[in-house]
Image 1 (cartoon, each protein chain N blue to C red):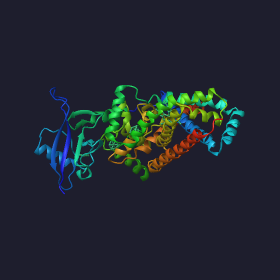
Image 2: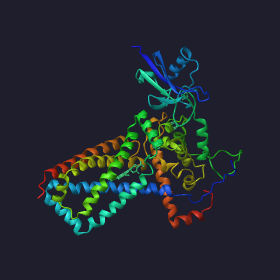
Image 3: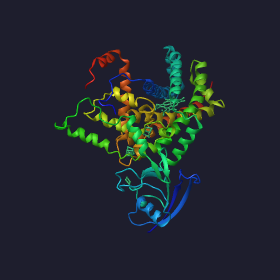
Image 4: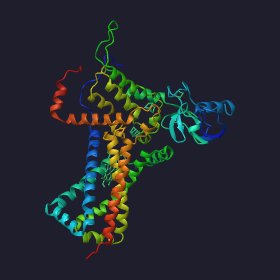
Length: 257
Length: 218
Ligand code: HEM
Ligand code: SF4
Ligand code: SF4
Ligand code: FES
């Protein structure tokens, strides 16, 4: 039952002025339990040593190998060729900066995004290294861990129609980050603080609910429910801001939670 | 990073986009309710022209048509202005979303494009429909039948009906997933509801149109 697989692979080196974007075709015989990771390495060994693509963990844990596989963003190391037809088209993730061929730079974008959503614990409490760490309920820790599983592969951004139409859109990975810190009892930020970060059309109100993020996330993060909860929270924050009674309460409260 | 962190429990800087989303939810939901009520009222002709005339007469005697008509028109306008923020008018955006949808082959992404496309049809044809009806009160089964039977209104209604029902069904589903009435776990159910809504509303609408087409105009 060995198939011959035909790979159509995007080629371009933006650093080389002579390079023009085009597709190259390679044929490989399929082997048992072949993943795209194996296939791409064989292509590089047997056909073209210049082919650029990224891999690190090859176990679906680092997010380096995300690419567009027959139209859908996904992890190459996690995709078995037996789940694909004989003709396989591989493109680099859109939206991110192209390094060359199938390799894109997700790192700079994620780094910038983490700064935009201030992806760290905000606390006024002084750190005391001699004291024990404060305890956290197990259920809370697990809920946080569920959202911390994001591997920064960028698939959700590449699949998002909103992100494709406006480059400054934060996307599901970023909104998921905010959802994660909202759960963290050590973070003293309130919804009004998060509103500053995501309460506009580059954040939660730019999302049109196309749910491609939810459908392509290789780690199956609960993105849809996080987005909906954030929308309700942030919309509620704007509403409360209009109520004079609430505004007074806010002003009167000391900055510490 | 500044240490201690310089965050403050201040009021949000701009709440415009949040209000726009609120209003989009409210106008969308209100228009949905109106369209379903509208569907049932018009479908009353299936029980006989007399039933429809009685209902229309009741709504007019209570002033609901005279008051409600312009209100719906206003809702329609506000909804258009709000959602127009999302419509890709620039060619660059159009190409991006079209290429994206073609490559991704993702149901909900296509549905959004269907929603935008149907919206433009509803905008033009819907306004024409509202204008003639409101300019020629009172509403009676015979007058409606005469219009449906007169070319090119027949064509207009045959196009307007599926476009409205498409837009309504997708809008219902989209509101649900955006705000969380339809959770991730219940999304398959939401999709089923969306399809059922489309089929049922389309069936009722088509039956109603058919009845108008065969109704005596005298
Ligand atoms: C028949 C009356 C209409 C009903 C019942 C209706 C209902 C809805 C609903 C419930 C939504 C989802 C709202 C949301 O995502 O927040 C929606 C979205 C939309 N509507 Fe309408 N609508 C109607 C007419 C129109 C018209 C005339 C236009 C023309 C401009 C329009 C344009 C849109 C667009 C572009 C969206 C997508 C917005 C987005 O994704 O953010 N609609 N509609
Ligand atoms: S649900 Fe929102 S974030 Fe996710 S793909 Fe759609 S528009 Fe993008
Ligand atoms: S949320 Fe999912 S798709 Fe998005 S970057 Fe994280 S792991 Fe990848
Ligand atoms: S190589 Fe690490 S996720 Fe694929």
